[in-house]
Amino acid sequence: MAKNVIESAIRNVANNKLAGKYNLAQYKEGGSRFEEKKKAMLHKQICEEIVAFADNHKDIPFYFILSVGVSKGAYKMSEFEKGYKRFNAEEVEMVAKMGRAYYDYNEQYKNKMSDVAIRLIMRYYERVSHDYDKFILDLNHSKVLGKNLGSRGMKYEDLCKNLNIPVKEEKNELVNVAA
Image 1 (cartoon, rainbow, N blue to C red):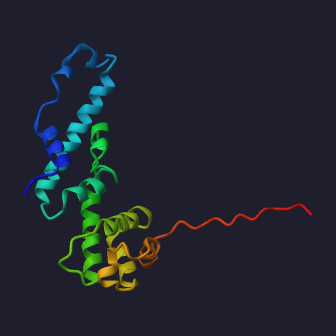
Image 2: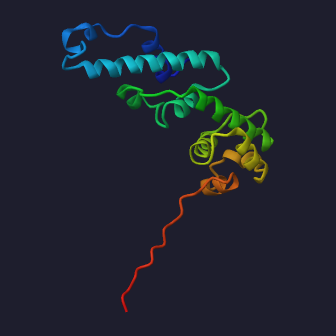
Image 3: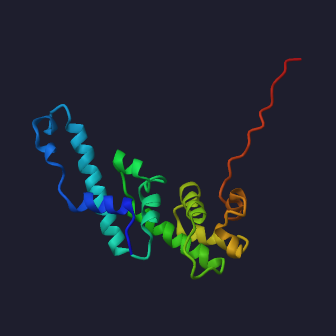
């Protein structure tokens, strides 16, 4: 199976040394471009962590690992070129675990998580709780959606409400009029 461009770029950074230019004087500590070298070293370290994680978790798609563990747009080449600043393996594992439970609860045992479902579970993780037991409690109080669990046909707000995820409410501002 052919690897996509971003995965190849990440593996390339992880498996190769930093560019030789970082040995020049301006990149040494105290030099004018030392911060640039630190960013490059951090990016390389994160790429190494991503590759190791992906190789140990072959059941989790690469775009999922990037979207959850790095940032929502990490699968884009433009984000890669800016340099990754963080990778959270525990978050990827928990969102994957929650996603699998969400799909099993909705009787979609063999299906892979859709991008909508990934965003939904990430939103739960970010805004409601990191606790798996709390997620299962909210999941057990939700309506079984079947094939619509991550569908573009359903309103995203309805999917959120079904899992007890707060939805951005419109602000109805009252204007005080002096009588």
